[in-house]
Image 1 (cartoon, rainbow, N blue to C red):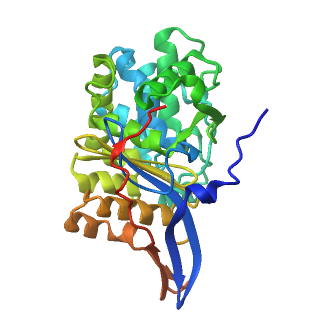
Image 2: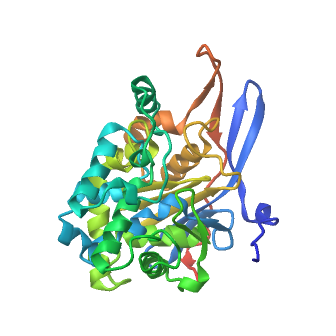
Length: 361
């Protein structure tokens, strides 16, 4: 098997975030950002988003869940807007997240044992602590990808595909998802690199530019995809913005951005330093940190710092919205006893010289 190396990634990326402790820059995080219009214009960038490739990870979930709508799965099983939201989520495993995934499976008529994503402790510390106090091990419903997998199972059942192996790349459900990702990125399926995610389902490798393009078309699909797919994009978009807490949960960036955006923003992060945002009117923003630093445990939360600075520089967040997200935008470093000893700060300026339509393939 051939492996795509990134030895030359430094030529694609630039410094996005600095971690400052006292008078020294203690660490830097390099990465790539793309701001793309639905018609394919690269509006702004940092680094080279056309050449930098990465796995989309969970930022692909809106597109992975879209077949639930255009194949009629949601209609058959009575999946409502909140159900569709949990199917696009990387949830915290808080009690209401777990209950919503269980509701999806109950409507479909399948037990949790069919889920292939495996078990892990809830991402939310309080929920994980509560399980420990109760002496209960985490189960498959606590997996942050359990909603996605519930939707995939529902699709397999609806289309008559085999239920075992639904997460395998060669399965009909996964092939349909691959086609849909190609549809919104204008890539041929063979151009998309397919790996395996932590939850055992496929993950999809493509350029940062194409990630942003897809999010632009999630927000403004008309004229770029056929009507049935445009309608499905609208349904998924509306489910996410109507139920932002279900997409991630308490204290999480995606939920807080969509709440601050009041219906105008869709946000979905992925593992290993990937984050994507769709902006009403048809703009997509995607970023990737080279070192994969991500999640609430990463020192200084560099992914959140870089994303919110990109939104600020592009005029997506007004000052009041940016202030409401300050905890994400300007995290501080503290001692064990809570004294502030450092901070994370953005270190880039969006390059707006690339205002032209990029090659879509």
